[in-house]
Amino acid sequence: MAEWVRICGVAEAPAAGKVMEAEVNGIQICLANLNGELAALDNLCPHRQGPLGQGWIEGEAVICPWHSWAFNLKTGLAEYPAHERVEVFPVKTEGEDVLVEIDG
Ligand code: FES
Image 1 (cartoon, protein in one colour):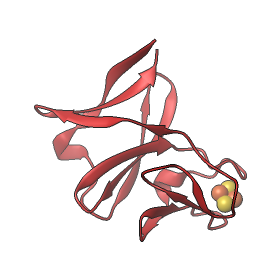
Image 2 (cartoon, helix red, strand yellow):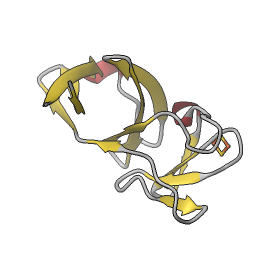
Image 3 (tube, rainbow, N blue to C red):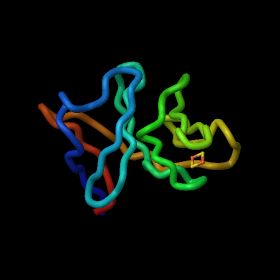
Image 4 (cartoon, helix red, strand yellow):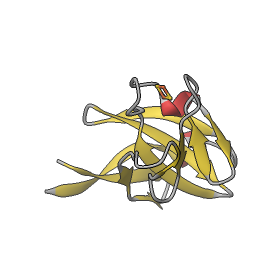
């Protein structure tokens, strides 16, 4: 069943245009701030498990730091190459906490 889990404090969340890595319940998450809105993706790139949270944002996509695959932060769909995707997790802030919804 899906549940909301604290991923970090609001103060620790990435600033606009930045990404970071985090872990909740053993799941590695790429937490990104796209124009002031937080997005949470599976941190592991489907190419060779590169850490998306160590990448950077271009347009609406996070770029994998290893070989530059690009994943849309809202949909998880790859802008390059086609037909790839990563999971997107719903994310919200509640008081001082940032929460993501994951399968418990
Ligand atoms: S591991 Fe991400 S592009 Fe290769």
